[in-house]
Image (cartoon, rainbow, N blue to C red; front, side):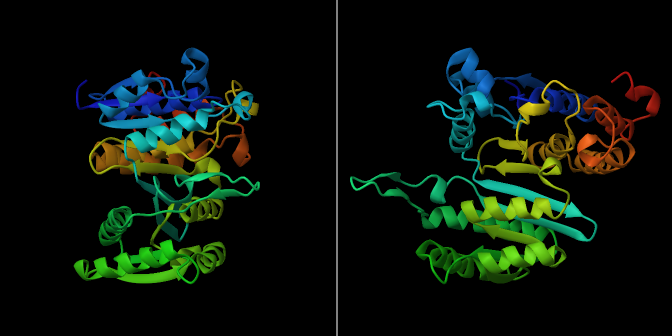
Length: 336
């Protein structure tokens, strides 16, 4: 597989519909990049019995980047084998530990850097003999150091401000987190570091999101705070994400779910998928100019052709066409 291959995982529900728009944009902005589709999620379970088939995993490992559409289907909500298991395994297998969640609207421009493969979601869990259920939050210092470094480096590339979010007044893992951030700070003298407890951070994100720039935090805190940040900047339906590794391909995906209730109706909003494609162009392929052009085009396309979730009447394809029209002469857009 050439180094310029992107694996596209169309997913479930509205996934194939928004994935089709992303593929058209990639063909326009990166025509030299091969795009290959593979199965993940409910579609993979139906075809192979496995939410992450070996063939999909191997293809992803050999790619330059992975572009993933939403997965999930109510059919498997209570099943032993679920679509989400494939997603979690893919992140772990690719060691995509650094989750980037930008939230931009008006005077708000922030980036949440979330540790993605450790903490409560990956710790020991189970049921004791007396019926007690437990989930364990664990972090190794190396896990904290690498995500903190990623936060420092991203802050250095922006305004030079880094906010580390924890619960150090209660949790030992958070005290480890704060200690390591403080130990790294002298290596980044151009970055101003602040610490904030997660409950205070949630309150201030809800009331004054414009005060933030780069936030770095652990897995569960990042999960919650990034959804809150999305809510105050337009909603989950518009939010993209990137999950990066130090040594392999990143995973780029919208935050919203597979929306099976509107699947096949042609009205799903592809903006988050297209914004995730912009992150792929920047962080996965190093094509910053194309990434910036696509991000602008999505904003302009949303204003021109909003889908029903935004109070408009545009279809998925119509919004996609409006975005592509901002990237090339109008006469060429219809044929792309």
